[in-house]
Image 1: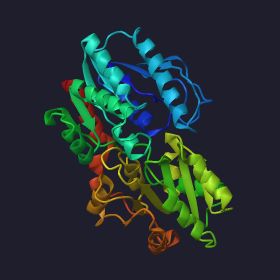
Image 2: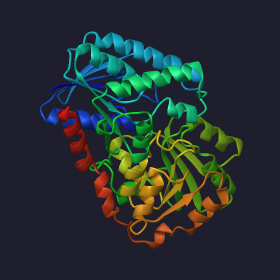
Image 3: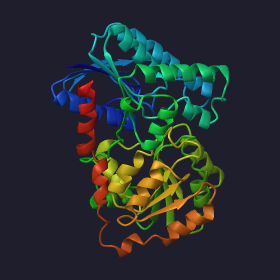
Image 4: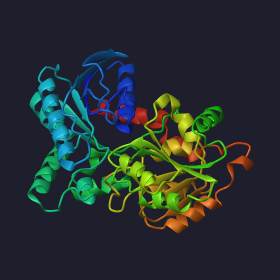
Length: 401
């Protein structure tokens, strides 16, 4: 079967959607399908880095298109970058051999609209893999006003994509419920969470020590936030906790990743002269296990109002390394339901946004890592979120259309 995949990021980019789409592409190719990818040419979080325009990689034909690189410092800049990618993507699609199935993700927002029209005009099937739900997310973030003309237009475009899709793959029950309220037929919606990276991520004691030594953190209790830094994941509570613990030599706070709010964390640390905060870019998949293992506590964040529009996919890899987890965000959500279900097997805590003192109490209550000979094993229930379980399910759904 000829399958076309559309998304702004793909191998060798290291952001989450790139990694998961790469897993899907290689899995489909291993099944004997002819896989073509149309994606962006520049790295998502480092636009100075360019990838080849055309590449045949592991049997996958990759077409990378350009676009403007105005950056994320203002909404209009991001909008122009998104629009330019959409335009060049449409041009590239004119020269791609018609597939039998099109799979589109959600980066940039509403790339699915292009995929839906392409599938309709080419007479092929369309699978919509909803990694985040827009314009709902943009409204929750304050980027769009409810009821504004542009919001209504984007909502109609989103609903068109949902109606055209033979399968809509969502990440949790909260996303599913939102789509039900939008009138999407239940038999079109499939819930498949994003998987953990089975082979790349596990507790790595040697990598942990090397990673910590390189950063001068060997004697510290390291609190880590690893992933996308965006308004969907407000970090104010965590940053304020770091500021209040600035005189406690035991703690160090490590922010790893990128996104529009990454520079804000760096500016916060400089403004308050915080020596206990360090910031690192996204880590490549081959060193992700060592990076995540270096933490003595992980923090996973979801903003108020974002339940059902985004998914805390970082939590699966975090749980694989066995460190305690603090969830900052609203209840109920997929994150709180997941951790509630694992409490018998895993140490976790829940904190609301603004509850800085409670967060500090949680961190101080966690065990000293030097007193344990090894980490806890990953929770047995986590196997249901593994790549070996979920990727075959997604492939089967695509083949079934």
